[in-house]
Each structure stands twice: as C-alpha cells, then as structure tokens.
Picture 1 (cartoon, rainbow, N blue to C red):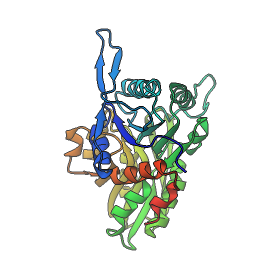
Picture 2 (cartoon, rainbow, N blue to C red; picture 1 turned 90 degrees about the horizontal axis):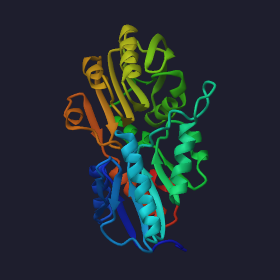
Picture 3 (cartoon, helix red, strand yellow; picture 1 turned 180 degrees about the horizontal axis):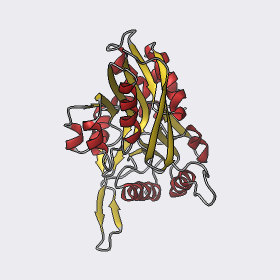
Length: 317
C-alpha cells in the first residue's frame, strides 16, 4: 500500500535541466522548474512555481559544477517542499558531488561525503536516489533510505554489440578492479589492470599493465573522469604495451581543468559517458565523446520508488 503522496511531482534546479526534462517526458509529466534567483550578495533565492502539498516530490539535481551553488539549490528546494507540506521528498542526485573524501586518509582530513549526507537529511529529504557513488559505503552515511543505481548496464549495453573475443576490459587503477570485473562479466570479456602510483592529488605515474593487451582492443572503465589524467595516461600505457585500439567509458563526465585537451590529444578513440552531468556543448560536440542518456532508467526508478516496488527489477532486461 502506498502511504506517501498520491501524485508525482518532478522538480529541478539549474544543474541538469535537459536530463530532468527527458525524465519527465518518459513519465508523461512536465518539470516544475523552480524559480532560482540570487540576491545582490550572491545568496540563492528559490520559489516553487506550483503547489506540492501532499505530493510525492522528486527533485532532480546533480551536485556538479558549480558544486556549491547546485548543492545549495538542492537543499533550499528540499526545505521549500518540506515547508509546503509535500507528502514525501526524494532527492534525485544523478551525480553525487563531494564523494571523494569518504574517509580519513590522513590526519585531520574531513569526511565530506558524510557531512553532505547529514545536511541533505537535516534539510528534509526522505530518501535519496543516485547513481554510481564514488564509494559504495557512502550509502551507509545516510540516516534515510538510499537507492543506489548503476551505470554499467547502460554502458555495457552500448558496447555489447561492438565487442568480440579480441576486446579486453581494463581497470584504470587497482581501486577500480571490482567495477571492471563486473563490467567484463556483463560483456563476456577478459580483464586487464593498469597499475599506477599517485604521489599527490590529480598527479599520477603509470607503472605497468597487468594482463595481456598486445594486439587487443581495450575498453577502459571508470565511474568518473575529472581531469582525465588517469584515463589518458592509462591509454598511453596500453598503447605502449601493444594495444591495437583504446576505448573508454564512464558514468560521470566531470571533465574539469585540462580534461578535454588531454582526451582530444590522447590515443582514446571514443569515450562513452552517461548524461548524469549536463556537459557544455564543446564537450558534447567533441568527436571523441559519445553521450548516452539515463533518462529512461531514472524514469523507471522514479516509478518504482513511487510504487514501493523492487528497484532491482529495472535491470532485469
């Protein structure tokens, strides 16, 4: 029995309107675009355009760049819905920012992922729907239910028909081996690993390649690409070790700093990325970038959450 709002309401801020509109279209609904403005000192001002009283509200907002503005927009929209007597509030966060500091790697480090989880809960979110958290244990940072979706099935579906026995799935670092192994099992391919050492943040040194890539077509798999240093140096290492061609894919295309220049100048033939982050036109129009939509997947997830059904069922096909 459904015990929450009796109508679905889709809200979004400024972070990824194209995805929100595509999700709403799949649901045969319209997006209720929050009126987002700023006071002269930079404070964010939000007004909801229509009533949400008693409704099951899904607020679609990635916390991508500008991260702090988009996060504050999300928090203020949650608070506005709570004070407007929404039946239930689900924060749909296709890309969950501030996820890379998920533990104390050094003394006096913050655990920012936990902090953001606490803030979202305090703001009034009743549950969170997200995709490919940088670390799976972040789900446990929340005191509210978290539905964690996966981008690998969408990426695997895209590459499945392209691949043959000459393809190898490659983990760009040791920490991503589990993800690469899961992906390889979906496409029935062998696996290799790029071993690297990171002396400091956003600076890496490729060491060697574990596995047979000579004469093979390699597909590097990662959850997110930020400055693209790892993926591009990994591609160069694969080519030096005899790889025939190098492809890459990821769920979240952050693409900050020198990322696009590195990708353009790299041996990567194609980089497939999901649209969890709204990327600028110069990224979308780059001939090496292939953008795949997750609108249908999120629309099915929203329908499933609303109906209190099993989320795992959406992956069965």
